[in-house]
Image 1 (cartoon, rainbow, N blue to C red):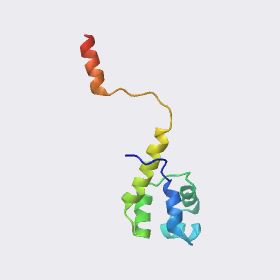
Image 2: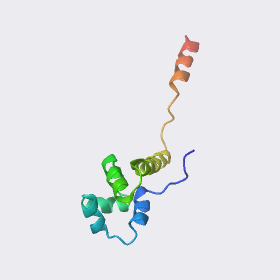
Image 3: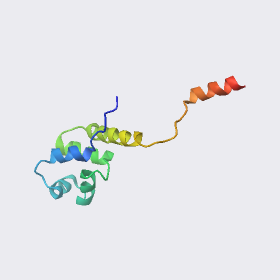
Image 4: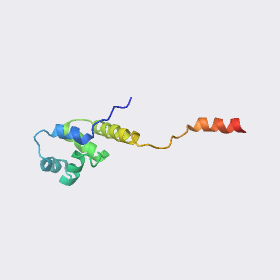
Length: 99
């Protein structure tokens, strides 16, 4: 079951940072301060590479970070109105019954 409006991983990352500055963590992760700031403010997602870096820095798994990102992305996408996609098998059955 999909979580209701999950937090962006950047929000959780801020909790992990505690008193650590953005500059200090960016340096530790070998990334730019701008890139880390974009993640922390929800303007950028967690890449596989960043998930590996965060897992090593905080003793978590890369999947922890990637799953949070996936849950967030799925929730955001599910909130956008879009055309309903017909199940492929159902469409084949409709063609058979029409013929």
